[in-house]
Image (tube, rainbow, N blue to C red; front, side, top):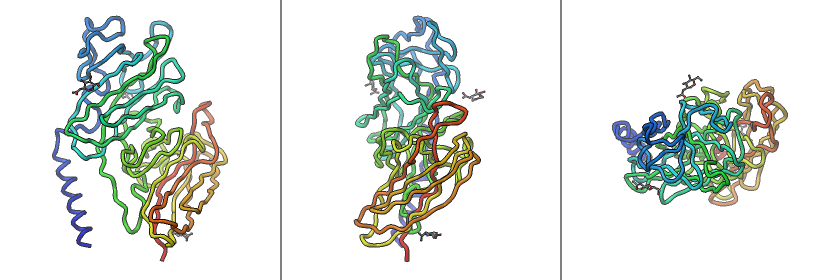
Length: 365
Ligand SMILES: *[C@@H]1O[C@H](CO)[C@@H](O)[C@H](O)[C@H]1NC(C)=O
Ligand SMILES: *[C@@H]1O[C@H](CO)[C@@H](O)[C@H](O)[C@H]1NC(C)=O
Ligand SMILES: *[C@@H]1O[C@H](CO)[C@@H](O)[C@H](O)[C@H]1NC(C)=O
């Protein structure tokens, strides 16, 4: 009990001290929406001239300053947030250093889309961490996909770099980046009532203004640096973080949508006592986003599992289900995925799926 009170007090202190630390950025990075552009003489057509010509950023290689709409050469770029974006050409990068708290967990949220090649990859680097985001799957019809990527701060500054690792025939080809924001996490701890951390997905990445398509949590994220605190994104494709403002969410202000069938799973490792029996309760439903049909969510805990059918008429319904499992070791992995693939009825080829919320594990008496 004393330990828990001490822990609680230190969390309160941590929280209050952080609310007064106004020097830390929350939300868009300085010029994170790229609305401040280079001066006209620092642009050759769309190509930025000089490493320091894009306000607040340092650039390397061929970086273009893009305005929303039709482009010379016949392409069309939709910039979802604001009217400007940057395009990273072959092996080009942009970077910015911002103050952070050593030891804290952060997530970057950014709008990114591919522009010509199928296999564009955006690398995010915050030394010593880096992650590669494959951009080949489009998750929204207007091209404005938003991603989140998490990292832990190791010093007082985080040098954030976005790098196009690709080499295409057309050196200008590469990902478009239209907004970059950051958020510090205060990851919830497990309790006796719920051994799952962040079981309601309430602690999640910054929601950019107008991210009405949800935020994609890229595949292969470890729980230590996950953009969804506590959770592991295990799969080959993204899981979508959705908010109450734009979607139906059964509980609280957020949930996740399992958008890529068996290729997008989400899980967590919880502490358990071997041979003890636990109850795993969770809710499945639809996000009221035009995703219809016969759905199935499969849940696994230790050696037990449950398949939960759900028929979606796109009405924003949900149901709560549960099963008991016996822990076989001191750590139990719980995992969820969608058995089937779904795409929106009104947007051909745009992936969608069942939603998951309010995941709870507790020992049965
Ligand atoms: C958000 O969307 C609205 C309506 O489409 C638009 O007027 C507004 O400029 C957008 N905001 C940003 C920051 O892009
Ligand atoms: C951040 O990293 C980039 C890319 O490696 C580098 O060009 C830049 O000088 C670094 N900035 C700082 C402040 O260390
Ligand atoms: C799990 O707990 C919930 C809430 O207390 C209860 O409604 C449900 O019946 C339990 N499930 C099982 C399989 O015992």
